[in-house]
Image (cartoon, rainbow, N blue to C red; front, side):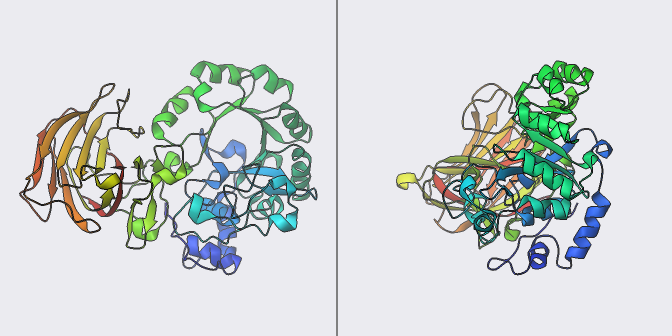
Length: 473
């Protein structure tokens, strides 16, 4: 799978230019439409489970924009999801929130906009998403979304706001969207009943009531992923319902759902869940593109850091806290024996504290990490402090991390703030070593073979931190 490059900042230019900026240098709209035709499948043709690009894959692209959906299509999305909101003039636009505050440069209620004013909103992608996306994208109208993607890719529109299901179904009719290539979803049983009565597959979201779903004529039921068990899937299947799980972004949560027999999974990072072979041995930071598996451990998207013009990724000193971000695409060829080179920059700790640190976490699965015990995480936490101290911590499941190796010369080799320092991590079947590449005497080695993991998480503790030039071999 070829991943897209980000657009250059500034004007998007024509629609074709915007697509070209993200997908490939030579991709025209005609070529993109041809790729849709190759992708085109019915719901029944999709694999089990299939992965739904929730909001277009909102961890990688500006949600609810045509440009974002085009990137998802170019990355072979199996299905596209969109939130449908009713506007003042009876038209419907694509936006998740009831207000425009989070994703645009404006404020106010979505429902107060007409098609004209909604189409003039500026998507504030660099603020809520980051990366190289420009800030002059527009939210999509459902009509345009259906015109471009309808009957080419399975679509999963959600009747989000009250009164939106009727206009949505009217547009599905007008665009002659085949009933076997769309699933209309809603948290409202009444809206699902309307969609089913209009001849479309309906999905009842947020409920485990198989009885209600069948009574309203739904074909699908989609509880929160934490509510799904193998027993529930068996019950739903026995009633003739298919089961979707929302919203899942990590593989450790995906795998039990697949084992339980779910039919589809909503994901903000569908490429990461869909393809375990999406791997890199070098960082992609210079492209300023969010790659599959670059996910924050906290609830806020800003927790996963940002890209910098010097080809690095990390977190600003301002508002420094404790943050960790999974880099799920970055995997060593052999987790039991590899070398990881990286350049690290620290821009100062909170309150001038020189003990603040940056870190690399190596784990056996993609569990989110916090600087506290975790019931399942298994691996090693490698810490680099501003004063130059190097530490290796063992992180076993269910207990606190323990220090198993440390080095600090005490000879004035503190990191130079604002400058990059080269490090090397070496993993063998028996040992883990963390060393400065420019000062080879500054090295710490721990002898331990309890866990060997291939998932990499980068972190910081109350300091501005940047990583770049990461290479695995």
